[in-house]
Image (cartoon, rainbow, N blue to C red):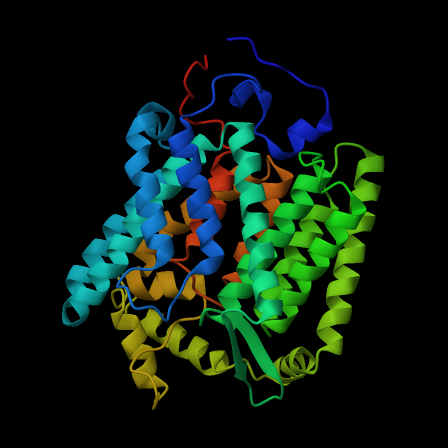
Length: 411
């Protein structure tokens, strides 16, 4: 099959290397599978924790996507990238740790395992499908559109959830979502828009009167969530984006645009009283309880270093040790500490080996690398191990991995 090798830097910006990607005009994957993937991506900002149905909307859309993948079985599952082999090994340790330490909370641990298995399959299939640069771009654009709609609905007050905080002001989110997760999702929307624009993959986003209001809309929504971790994660992603460009002129141009976005973000964070007060509190050592949770987690790791405490059990143990009076369990608020206290060192080794493989793949693409940086910073103050956004970002990253399945017609 003839590969359409373009010298335009815009193609290289968002698509896998030509040696590992299908032709621009080659056969496209089944439209049912593609649109099921886009539906899943679109649903990510609209999770509804306060719902009447037993399953999250994103869990349902992920399942619908997986049900369509047999239509493109070879494209979706032709080969497993090395990162997913590591994550699969971690899940085996997860099961063993649950059998040993989570018997008292077996049902909750089983539910978490089911979510993780589904997300691993979604990451595998979506990562392979997004090797097609058209699917890759469309997935990013879908995320941008969904985040923009989220922000517009927030401004209109539709589904708005506002929680007053003791530092002053209100943290705003949608549909009862966790404000920190909302900030990460909206930040991913900003970075996806930046990547599409700098890569030249979207003519619409190259228009200044479209791009800048969009970034301002999403950035303002991030600030109003009151998430310090979300603002820092977005800043990290923007810093990575600032270094993008194949030529010196492109890097200067992209860097200047990103610096403007960062300056606007900083200005917004400092001029929103609630956000400013929360950063002042963080500087004084108040981290919304994390300053108590992190030392407890380190002691838990020392006590059970091999297989940890087991999934879910570690959360109940955290609550017991910090004398939590409101909730029966508390989250670890850190991805690394969550892994080592649920599956111990035995589970941490394959998990972080998988993340390292993702990092190596992420360096091949600017948009994917920026999103990966955002999520890695975001998970230092939140676990999000079962977050759909985390595994979507890993799928986008693994779309850059050259050790992948061939798409139909690719040789």
